[in-house]
Length: 430
Ligand code: GLA
Image 1: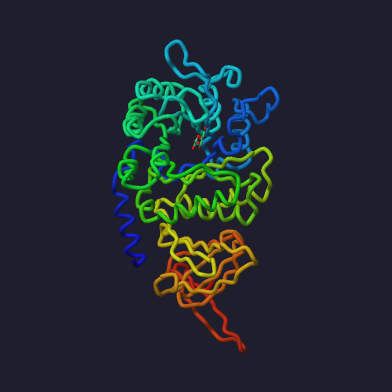
Image 2: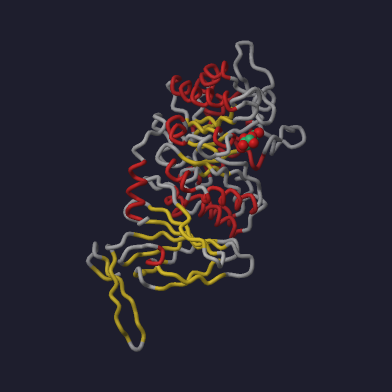
């Protein structure tokens, strides 16, 4: 399909409904406890890392003080293992009193005082995946109201210990119950992940109407093979998944593990680039107290964040799989711009990949390209052959800006062909 047609088709599908709570018009960003801190409840021996209010306060402080919040990382999300094993005398969920002595409401206030938001975790079923109290159908209203009373801003609703029939009932009911509280609460549904992630079992039109984001696939782990298998599944199924995404409704390939132990710097750049192409929620699961400066600069890369957060909200796609192991990914962006990712599945050495923008389906014209990781810019005609050097398991990522604004003025000086760029808007040579 021609790209113009593709953009039109994608924009047309954006007029289908999204959960009508006005939230998450761009993919949500923040921090989520699970992948890095799991169900560590041993606060006696591991006080710094156990699931307790201190952990979330520490992460909130880092988001607030270390420049994350300004970039959009505003959600601080509790995952499993926060609850007491027993509901209170009125049947409400309650936080573990030893690990969360101030209760969830105190944490929500702490976040709100700093311009941050608090997310919580529940489970459509008898128990959470970690064995804590779940939310059976009869408990949906009371739990939604409890979260709203606590001033929570987002709910991840998992699906362990329930069957397909219960899930089909429970996920839409929780959506209604959250809306009925009158408090805007972002709603993350794990439902499709429990139903294989694909139609006919999964109805993406319905999901877009009841959830702001949804987990489609298995849990991420702190390893390159895990990141790769998730990316592969999402891009293999892009024809089903990409049309489901749009402002207010996002596919969720799971957390960013950048800053943990399993990924090299190149692999970290790859996860960030592919998640930006996918218009994925950006929930880091790492230790912001000790993160390396290298990992931080990847996660705080403004150009990649703005690509991820592009207001059109069109999920990008893989457009080429070369025999060499190089793959090309593309995402259309607002202002006639786009993002390109050159990704290498190779394990030998940097691969010099030669192509041109016209080979990647760009229409005739000149384009300004910016390498988002090096900030280097160039101006390329659609027909210009260029070479990118892509590291093993790494990426080169470009922001490609609108054709027409820049024109080439090749001129000869000495024996060399020089290129000079003319900016039509400024009416001048750059
Ligand atoms: C499931 C979810 C994970 C995490 C755990 C918690 O496995 O997919 O993201 O929430 O449960 O037990």
